[in-house]
Amino acid sequence: MRLSDIPFGTTDWSAVAPERHAGEAGEATWRVRHFGPQDNPVRVRMVEYSPGYEADHWCAKGHILLCLDGSLTTTLEDGREFELSAGMSYQVADGAEQHRSRTETGARLFIVD
Image (tube, rainbow, N blue to C red; front, side):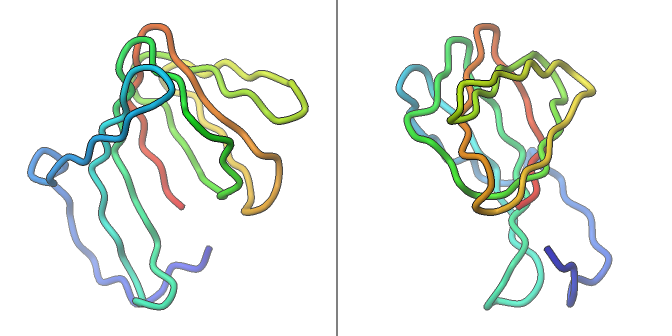
């Protein structure tokens, strides 16, 4: 990821329209902003997983993810599992280990990809 052509700015996440995405169970609510050049923007998201959320797909996209509240379990395609709670993060490159997440209690995440 290269951060270029992004002037200083602030984001009031409560003013960004929510997008709802159904999971295999529960739902994810995304608030999304895109920054930088149109041909290769950086996507920045505030994401909330409902209690009981489980992703409906394996993801191959790279992310930097910070858990702000709650907790989540991320499973890699090889079966390894990682537990994140508030204040913890993970990072993974595009095309690296495919992953999917779930949460029993719900979680609020800040994600850059």
